[in-house]
Image 1: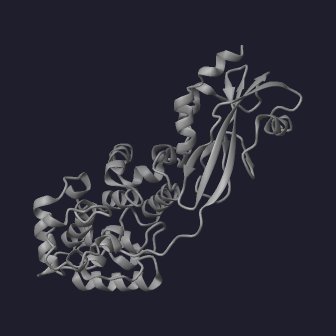
Image 2 (image 1 turned 90 degrees about the vertical axis):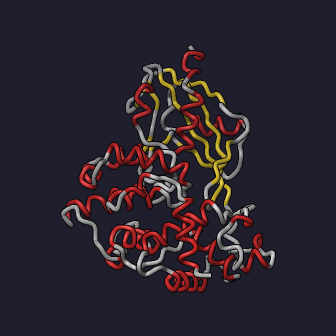
Length: 353
């Protein structure tokens, strides 16, 4: 079996029609690849459409304010991708005259671009023989060749990259890379793949030795930490609330949130109420405290789980640095906050009057 020819033939008959497959423009390819990191196509596609509509070229993206980029990114998570996207757009527009580097090695020098993204852009846009290796490729290769080396180990990263580079069609690297990723995404799925119709099934070691569920192998991740977040949703008499911009490093860097009190465990109403009394925003002011959700909302991130409660704080008085409630949607917030705003809709504003 000729591995590369088989999957390229399969791809020609089974590929999904996606907008970034209709172009070799490095800006659009780069944008699609950044959006699709840690994101499935069905979720990422609307974001690609929004970004290309708002920012048709790298110059428009470079001229945008970071808050505007983060707001458009809201809901995709892993916000460092958006910040790096914006920083790289400014570098390309201002330092490189709007032209993307045309080699794998030079693409790697750009912020937010690693081995996979550099390989994808170099092969699709510039026909460089640079093999891509992402989760889909790991799965296809480990199953077909029966490789049990952990894919998230240093040895595995090197081994699978070398193997992919050996297999790539040197005359058609762009199509090969897209074909093997598409095969992994739609055919060689993580759970319950339909191996009976897979074009590689006759030569697949995992299929023929009944090892599909065993491969690929992945080392166990570190234990997930639990954190307890309590957001104070202030409502002042002048129709304003408080949003604070997160500073410093972190996944929500430069996003906005309600004032936060982090605790070591879930606290009951009485104990937490005493903490709120000491908060600088309510000192010397009358307020009423209402717990929005008795059961914590669990927001799962890759390395930590956030057990979150929202506390409504109705303050008798006006705010000094508040944000009009009617303007909250203009601010880029984490999806956890955005979901709360959508559900709550500030219907309780008038219940305290």
